[in-house]
Length: 495
Image 1 (cartoon, one colour):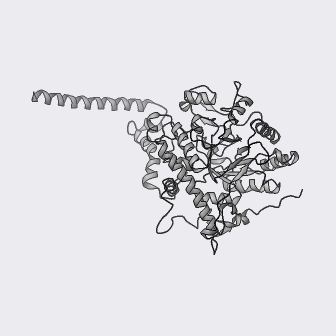
Image 2 (image 1 turned 120 degrees about the vertical axis):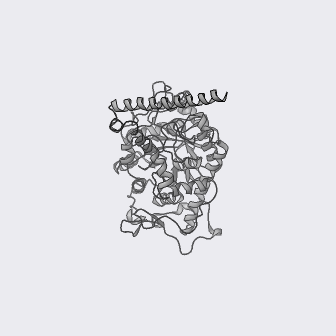
Image 3 (image 1 turned 45 degrees about the horizontal axis):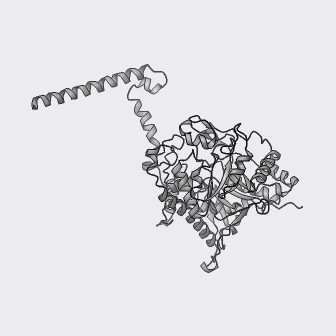
């Protein structure tokens, strides 16, 4: 019996060796005769190691080789900051900061010699969108809110956790351009329904805007406002992209599109080719829904904001959008062509103050509320945005980190290891909705609290008192300059 066993083991070993040799021989012949890859043709078999390590390179860099402040798009120190806020562990560090105050672009807030005492602090007041200009204005309570992430781009449990967490924190949640799903409504949070260029969720059988569908959605109490998406920072000039692998039957039904086919939105609204038509569209949606209507856009220069303000002044301030969401060119939680993501649209650092200046010059600043977005995931960046003139801050990736995102850079591949941007049920297992909803709420509440903390350090009673003189930006020579010197407040034109 032992002899037979030994013979079997030897035979099995020989078979495995022969099989391995044959496999390597097959791979050698295949590699040396193919014409697509030079490395494999010149170095059969071993050339595969190059591609293997190239694929693993970004993960090795992330965990072993890059410093806390080096990684892109978000470094480890920033991600750690968000994780601590989401876990309610506080943003406390020891032995000094690794943030360099001498790097160009570094933020420095002007602390007051006599900061505000606890008993003198005030609650940051809410702002009302559409007050006096629509039937059902919306009172927005939180400075920090959930930016547009479509159901489809992110998973059902991710949307559920965001909805529940937003309700707990008192912030709004944008649907993104993918339409309103049952998961957005699950937590009963305030919802801003985004209308993208493809009209997903609000389209008729011809793909045009459906007024009947608008009325139906406006009747939902938690849908507080509507947002016309012109463009986004990740891919200005190109519509949304949802790969076919992520267009499930449920998503196809919600969007009103075929299942299993790439979902590619037009690069603009076909019926909107100038600011006059844009204002017509805003007026139509506001009249049909009775709720505030705003726009979301990335900026490439100053002409659009100036032209928009001029058109509003010709029509009267009632024609203005109730809010404008300015998305910086560094934004983007979804799939996007690298050429657009890297090189098109102004950074939020430049776009936001310029957009605010246009509203001030036209005397429209009080009428139009301003939302800023674009890598504003920390309280310091959010406080900068308020200093520059924003009323609110939207973030997508900040809330993705609060859900457990590890920046695996697989958002477009339907293989997200944390279950956030995939529709693979097996990968959803690790995303516990109840736990992640609590982290979403913690992140939002702690962000608001830290923004107020910075304000109090600057001698302000609450965060809405931030002005440009409270923020300084380090210049290439290592010295800082006040934001109001870089972007002086313009003078409002006389009536």
